[in-house]
Amino acid sequence: MSFSKWIRTIAILVCLVVPSFVARAGTPAFDAIYVFGDSYCDVGNVFLATGGTQPLSPPYYFGRFSNGPIWVEHVASAMGLPMQPSLAGGTDYAFGGAWVTQPQVTPQGTIPDVPQQVGLYLSQHGGKADPSALYILEGGGNDIIGSLATGITAQQLGFQIAAGIAEAELLLRRAGARNFLIPDVINIGMLPAAQGNPTFATAASVATNKYLNQLLALEGFLQGIRIRRLRIFALFDAVQADATHFGFTNITAPCVNPVTQSVCSDPDHTLFWDTVHPTEFGHSFFAVTVEAALNQRTQPEDRRIRSAGGWRISPSASSCRGGGRGR
Image (cartoon, rainbow, N blue to C red; front, top):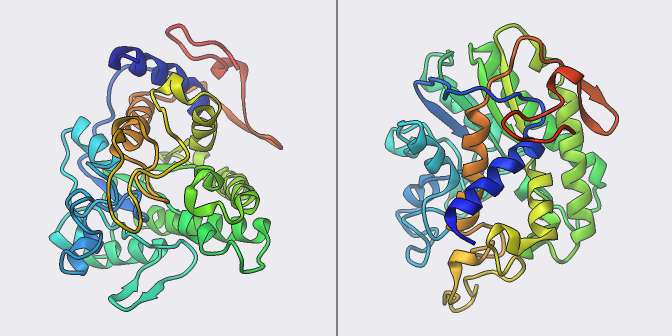
């Protein structure tokens, strides 16, 4: 697939991933991007905290849990903003291995959970959140993978993860934050690391997204608050249904051998770098979708209506402009 065709495919998918927004030209003017989450967003905090030993680089890319820059870096670059780890004085507070529901104690130290990462940011900024910044809240995958055999139900775990993300949003909003990007949890059942119990992993992912939609429903209508929710679960389901359409030839086997650390011959068309993390191509795929979503505006007449099955859009917002088809 050519790059231009790939970009057009992603643009069409924005109608699926961000059905609650109607397109308008122009990129929002944020003065910074603050990131809280796990290894899908960590641009080097764990690498710095472990003296450059984790993740092993190479084959990992300069402290990223992938073989190249990750999606938050692509998004920041597209907006002309820096993206550096908080331990180096930057705005990315995400830590590889972080859970949403509780901190993780490791031999190298304690990994803060997502609400604790927010608390650290606020403690360093006088308890105030920059109202002109974009705040990215992501996580839940580690909670699900770490709970495959614990006996907790998918519904219980999904609610706990959603409550943790909602708590982080509330802390930031009360401190003055106004703009949020909160993606779905992807289908964790797709990950090679979850193949011991993929049914539970998928159910927990669905439950997390359901409860997160419910917990954030009212916040999206508060004056001056913008919460962008991205249906990444649906996006990756589309990839699973027709991988080659999106440029992937391998969406099941990881590229890196976990024992020998040898690398596959075609990482540029492989979805997973290891058993948990996407390749650079996978991250780029996600980043293009996010950038398209951030280039959209919500019109005053738009009304997002909650239904039992997820977002249901009012007639005024039922179609994607520029050639999209109504849903």
